Length: 130
Image (cartoon, rainbow, N blue to C red):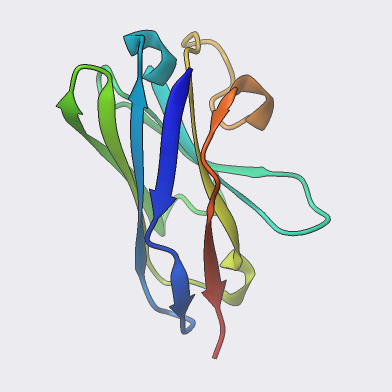
């Protein structure tokens, strides 16, 4: 199991930027092999945005955010990570609760499928409005 905590959400005008932070720790290194950001609005399924393999830093993005969002990570020690989601040119439709997720995946597993992750944070709200 991994413990995840998100921060950095808030309100921003269209075209603005936000940087979300996820602090993660786990007993076993494998539980944070892959980390990802998802978002969800009420009544809709959780949407995968970006994922990162903490071993090499390889990244995956949803096409809807590829040119505007960047996922990155730093190590804070054995099985302790901070994962960021830098978001630029935010749009009203980016308004959602944003979640950090982690799990031990295979390279062949879908990285942006919420069903692949069993460890989740509580989320941080992002609101984009004028």
